[in-house]
Image (tube, rainbow, N blue to C red; front, side):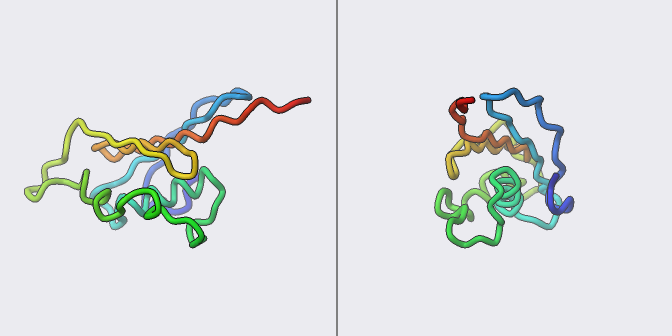
Length: 115
């Protein structure tokens, strides 16, 4: 499900019912080599189907990448940050990033299709 397991570990998705949104979960590894925004960009790419290298629209158009990377990184002494989260919208997706590295992405609601 995720292109590069070194960036994150994905969690099983919830069961999907027509007309409902399906939340995509992924966990960023703060001890790994990737920045939080790299994990986030790849996760949004997976959910949206837009290639992560497509430069027409970038995550930086919606959030300050440097600030986002620093927001939940461990403190200088190595202690993890606790009990925080940030929610924002990217391309109509609701993105929530938690201080423990958990990321939840909710796709836009799609109107019911006529049969």
